[in-house]
Image 1 (cartoon, rainbow, N blue to C red):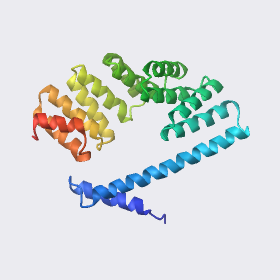
Image 2: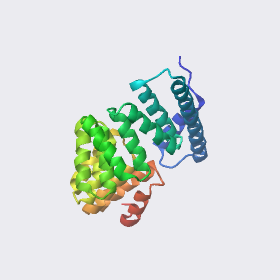
Image 3: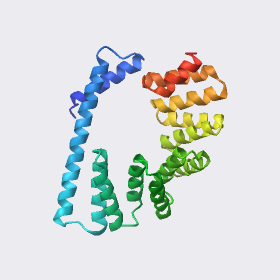
Image 4: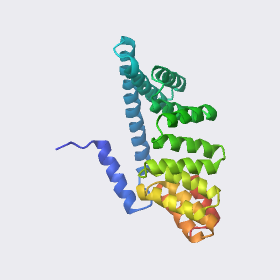
Length: 251
């Protein structure tokens, strides 16, 4: 029988308590913080190992061509998670130089560039990724997020639709499209999208908050209050839900 870790047991106990009551049990906040620190430490150790192993393979010369490009990309992903953005960007760029037809490297570099607010360069990478592989849902989703940030919600909706067409079982594009549809005043369609995202994961606080906003804009204050309340059960710090609940009341 597989042995359960103490961390796993603690997470299960907290999850059960949260299912029973919307209020955190005594000591749960401190326990959650401690668990988060442990998980973060484990992730850091994992990425450090990835960087060390990838660096050893690269420096030894045992990988070349497409294999070298993939190793560089893997090291870049680890460095990105470790907040070593300059080194990660350098590795992504080297990976693309080694294999300029590898769409995942363009997508990964675009996501890093977007996080650094270099939206035009990120858009160029995603355009190229789509040219190389027009069936990849991630490329369309990521490009839609850039259109959304630029305020071009019509184009954002189009890209999110393409992402959903290619992979209808991922929640993020539904949620993102819902956000743009709210801005465009298409509240019923937005409600459908937020519900679709929640069908995938009903513990998505941001989707509940978005649903609340769609109902609020539609004029249904009762359903808005209910949705904001569900968002705050999942994440009491959700600012969109807190602001929304202060506007519409608690139902």
